[in-house]
Length: 167
Image 1 (cartoon, rainbow, N blue to C red):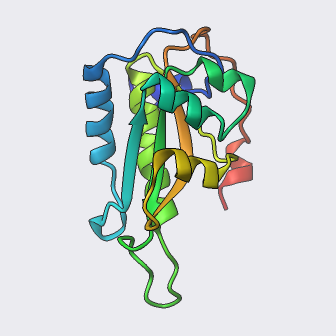
Image 2 (cartoon, rainbow, N blue to C red):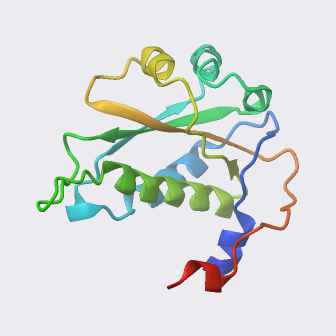
């Protein structure tokens, strides 16, 4: 599959089978994440893989939507603002940009492996922090449910035409 085919194959999955993700697939995905570029190569991210049923159930309370209950794994993507590059001219923190690049590497690698993901950013951050017992320097930015899609068919994506996107 070429890169364009991969980007077309990746979609937001909101219903998963109960099949567990194989450790070798997780290893592959995280090697792809490790290769993600970041500003000044600081790699200001940390990822927590949650598969333990008790902790997974607790984490799911941070995003109380019915569909997430089907996810056999959730990855908590965290930014470390103390490790990130800050632009000299205005102090802009690039942690979220760097983490976004790494998370999309994760999502594309998962799609290549036949797995589904969905970015979840509208979650209860204090609850997530509590469940994950995160230190103050790590900000949970996104929850990424990961698993085998219950319906692997890809719906046609609605995207703007190039003329609307490029100046």
